[in-house]
Length: 207
Image 1 (cartoon, one colour):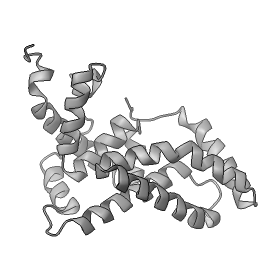
Image 2: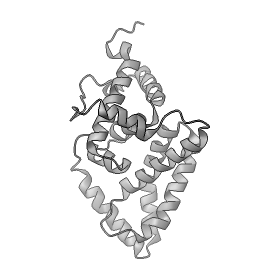
Image 3: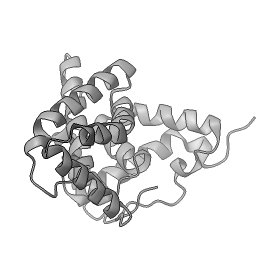
């Protein structure tokens, strides 16, 4: 499970920056290493957000195609992983908009309403988390279904924070928003998941 900060990521970030610098200097193998390092994680993120294997494959391919073009000129010291995740998230959002013939919700409008109602939230309450009980196979299936039923703006933070193990700061950077917004959305999403998984969380499920 992610935490407020992830100091252990510093060495990984430095490794990525070294690979990026090598690639910018003409070492194509360095980009291939970055690709193999993050391909599965980008695909997993896209699969969770799009709920489609085919769409996740397309988004993964497009993410690295854009990376090949854009990262060539990115400034030294840039953080590769959040950049890749941010591109993938935006591609998922664009795909969702194209597939939706009518607008069922607005990221900005719906999230803003929830955030106004949650201004007092400073840290998501992680007690009795249903996501902490993923060792049970039936629970895994129920949690996966519950996550897929969430609105996109809630599913994004759940996938990044819990399933991709990103910190709140990292999640905010990937989504280009504030940490307070991430905390608010996490709280709303957690409430929705607990409601959907009520019988499992309370242990009342029989059989």
